[in-house]
Image (cartoon, rainbow over all chains, first blue to last red; front, side, top):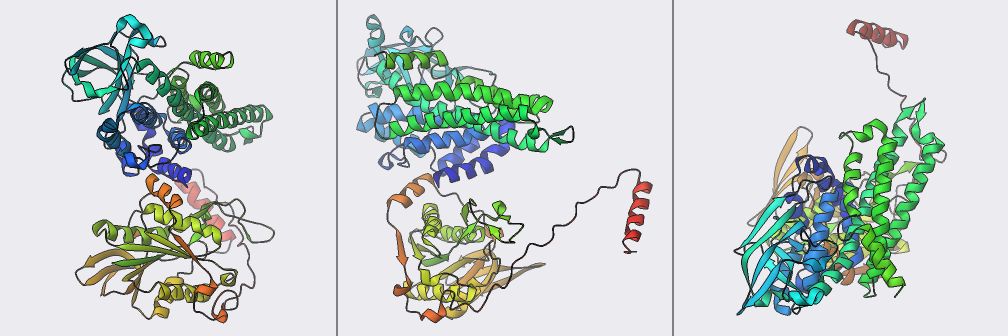
Length: 369
Length: 262
């Protein structure tokens, strides 16, 4: 029933505005409000913390269904849930959960996550954001880039060096509210795809935050970031899966309707073989994504599973959408059909929350342990 | 306030195909849904509850065990409890036997102020069960409700007509059958779905729980018998006339003449 409900929500509320959100590069605030009313912003958060109390599989299905019609909406939910809410649930104190997690899980506030810096992408240890304890406050200076939900979110999990000499072990995580003095939103990126998703720079200039906003312990930041991204990958894998499924659905419809040489083009075996491959890849991706989600829901290790799911699902999304454009021919290349948007949206899934190459590093590290 | 909403699980008729040889519905693989008019009925009850949280809503259905799904959906949308009337003895019921059974169940529930029913189910399209329940319970009823106002001590509704509406006032207990123009039903909330599955809020009543003779229910209690079902011949494919207005008019006139229509 959960999946059916997501499907209905996507068809009625998300699909009708997807093209416009892309074209105008507009953050779909109204959809976020609807998701809040509908209890979608804290799917996998326990009910005692304002969530729905469902599991990671239900959450992955939500991102998947949304992304079938609009990958922008998919990533808004994914970044909010996996990256904004989960670290507080996992590492937050009871007081932090009450103060920050409950409004996030209820959807009254939107969450985001700031790790990446101009010189610290995959190599997160290159953090140049500094957090210096002064009495009972941290003074934070630095810049984050490519932050999903930037400018739209109210609560950010950010990372900075508390002890630069210690390298990875000198990174700490903090909870920061958007109205903190010294916190400003910098450049808003213009992108190839997921154009409605807000991707911005975060600038901290002598931003003072209370000591109790430290998430976990000092020096635990890298661990928190890596564990959070392990889970976040399930969300992105689900997003990629949804994009591929959305493109497939449109393509099946199209090849049945489009006629050339007096027959629907779906009757041509050359195209049928292409579509058989696409469908097989999608189903394989789905099994990997659900496998990772179920492992996380059951409390089993999921780092490798999530990496494999994201690697395979994102490459599937790119491959399937590219072929879907091909199968649509010239029409597929035009903005009159959603296929070119899906192809542009698919590309990011191979990049963010760890590139495909990083996923391979994670998988290899696990099997060669 | 106590409200009972009668709902039904139906095949999603948008997805139903007809077996061209046997002339029967192909039900396999067709998803089941909560009947759309019933969803509007439930939504209206939920709006009463939004205003007055002390309102208690019972969703009631009759059907096979899997009809429990629509009760879960109803509870996920916000109803307090569900009752499933399920027994082999109830099966094969037409509207007469169905309304006998449901009315008995409502008597067993006892207290109620309003009974909401959807106008009709999309699988049978009879629109009979709601009004029959009202008759059997001996309470006033208004069908085709398109607007509902709960006022101090009375209930006022607009009853849709072909070319307008009637304003009807009544007092509880009352039975209302609703049409989809009444409201826009909410989605079941995600926390609601989880609660509905985890918490046991559904009772199943069988034949033994209802004080009703077996001759009033199921196939034996059903005066209607289906003699034959058939698929109407599909209409021929339409033809678009091409050319200038004159050409189109000429060819239209010619075609009408050929068919001896003019």
